[in-house]
Image (cartoon, rainbow, N blue to C red):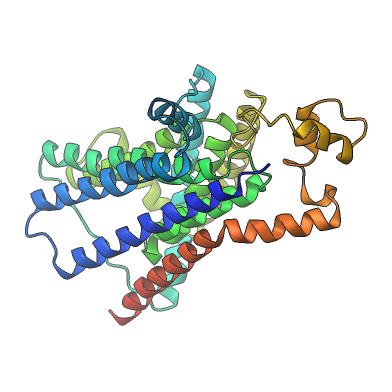
Length: 365
């Protein structure tokens, strides 16, 4: 039968992670580190510990508690999507999607912050002074490498693992994890484009059945932001012209119209690339992967007398859309689904409150 408790336990783990993150951020706001070196150590500890070690450890302890220590690591890597090897085609599609995501998310960010500004919100971005190549390398590690890996471990690894072998809608899972990803930043100015990027990285993980494509896309997005700021302060060759092109797109009416057109084209191309990625694999990330219990064979006859295998039973009942099930089965699944997601809903509420607080703080500045 469906492992409802697995989904619930993963939700509880994620709630605990976000609660710790919120406490640490409040503490950091009250007593900020005195210099950049301590700030770098702080950021590293938060990423590695809260978004890396904690989720993987708690998953092994509370979700895989019945498995042997040796099998826990193997199942952990499989459930989190680390084991699947990527073909060259998948890597190239990922790079193309990430490039389009970087461009189109800039448009989302522009529109989102324009709306906030019209509402009276004042956004004061933190600015790093790139006075040496060492600062650039440090920022690439802290802003691109660590978040790309460890934030994906939590959002496309832990959360996606919690919904494996379930009949939950993939669209719901991807949108829900994207929302959690955006609220995790607890910054209203980042909510718009991080939600959009979370959807794209969710579909990358879903269609490739691997966590590596969203890690690559996440790294490319954050690395571009760092390198762009570095080039803006220090000059460069090709990239400085790219920044000038962005200034044109955002500085004139014709530029904005062109930007809107290019945004629509980018989204269409992303959808087409997802279709190509989908054709690369026969199953999606949430497809049942573990052996089904033998007693399901008898139950399959009740659901469909013509069913001749255990797999046919699970295809029809466990992974079937709700509208194909009998009324009492549908009600039972909906009730259990709400119960399974209770910790996720609580986390969304906490993240929303923290994000709204950041918006109010921006209004008061």
